Length: 275
Image 1 (tube, rainbow, N blue to C red):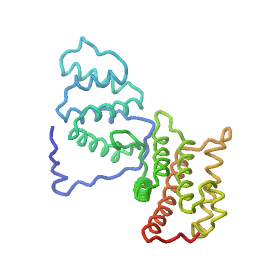
Image 2 (cartoon, helix red, strand yellow):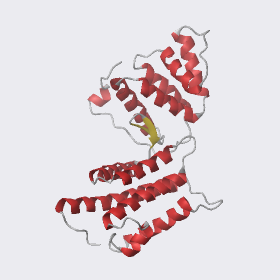
Image 3 (cartoon, one colour):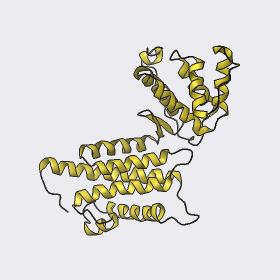
Image 4 (cartoon, rainbow, N blue to C red):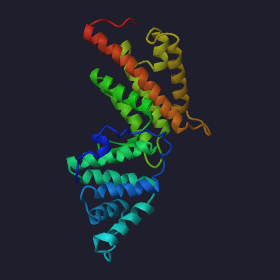
């Protein structure tokens, strides 16, 4: 195993280029092969990987294969190539669980860089595979989590994390769940800012029209209407799409960040919010 940077990185010639995300509900053949390569780079043997693939896929090892190369290597290759796409990501998570901290960091970086440079909409975060959006989405989510944590809004932070978990579900993301949880995050923050712990977000926007500068307040009202329609009162044949849910999470995260920052400033300066 080695953690030495390659020539291109040492010389400042390497630039990781983020490719547009085009792959979510799939694990391309080249990714399956790369996982095996990245694992072997940690000085691991094919038999080590076979112990993981057989466990995740719930199949017995072929005891007729006893040599590491080519027999067991070929066997684990077949496991990776033939399993359902979402099980590939289960295998990645299991690999990470079995690694020591240094190995985990190296393997995680390798796979995450592969995801970014090949347009795969997943990322490894804290040892788990989670949904990955474009740069704007990722920035919005990371920022809101940080702001809510600083403002000690644990319930709101939990809700936005649950929204991400819903988008990350495999093989089918929970679209309506993501919309509901992102709305709940914004509602929690708005209740804290206004001091009204019972009203819905829609009612809060009517009771406290200055909470968001006009005409942006109308956008929040429209989001409430959309999430209420698509997340809570879903109609047959009108299910929201993944990108719509991702947009709702991104927008609500940005608004919750704005309100969370205002709340943080007010607490620091011990001022009352003018609502």
